[in-house]
Amino acid sequence: MPTVKIGPYTLPNSLVVAPMAGVTDRPFRQLCRRMGAGLAVSEMVIADSSLWHTRKSRLRLDHTGEPEPRSVQIAGGDADMLANAARMNAEHGAQIIDINMGCPAKKVCNKASGSALMKDEALVKDILHAVVRAVNVPVTLKMRTGWDRDNRNAVTIARMAEEAGIQALAVHGRTRADAYKGEAEYDTIAAVKSAVGIPVFANGDITSPGKARDVLRYTGADGLLIGRGAQGRPWIFREVLEFLETGRPATPPPLDEVESILLEHLEQLHLFYGDPMGVRIARKHVGWYLQSHDAGKQFRKRFNTLECATAQSDSIQQYFAALRNGEVFAA
Image (tube, rainbow, N blue to C red):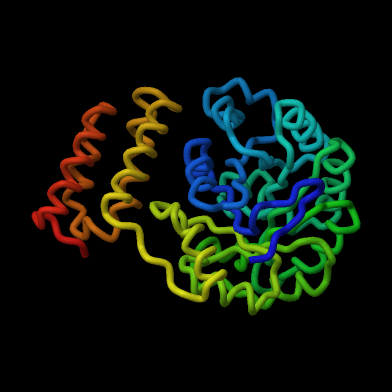
């Protein structure tokens, strides 16, 4: 597995936790790093600092205890506002600033940010230069292949980014119009890699060690961003590393370890968010962890009615005890 350097930081490996709103909070980032990820990028922080007083923004800006380097993603559609957001995040401890030009969500794109920016190359250029000038830390860019399949301009923007001083690129193999539908395409990522000299990370549909190997080979990318493939499977990073290093499929984690990881994750969510927010957020993570076990979703339906942290943890322990005794069967 090659190592990648972003500015002064040499990553321990080139597997990165992709930023995902509502998912890559501090507990999840720290867990994925322990499970082998070389870097974990925060949920996107809105560029308008006047909104940072909200509880959601304060939590997204919390990087207490995270291993270096700490990467923070910012989102917005105004060059000066993004530059200010980058500056303020760097002052709050961000060691890498990542610009979001990849999110396809309507509530983001309708405000001319996220992947909507790829429609306006002049604005993209202004943003890239403004953010790079604003901070003394490395700036990276996450984007899609283009606005739609008739307008794939990732190569143009990649060259623009390199010229502006961007230190690394991540390219999701879908257009904005694709959202998350269909299969990711990797030809555009390979073209981006051929067009620039800075590190390029491939993203999209990387859900297994074998797929990780194939995407690296096909695109020539320097590393990978793994997003949805890590939901409920934070150990995917160590599985990919083991497969790339040895060529042998990794052994899936035993049931006891899955239980231990899940209980630890729940505890950290409860501590980080408190009640009742931690309980609500834990529900979606439990759903992801148990996809391959609770095929009928009967346990998850019951779990989602629980209203306190202790009840959630107790129910998980009871579920795994029943699973080991053959009372609940894996799908």
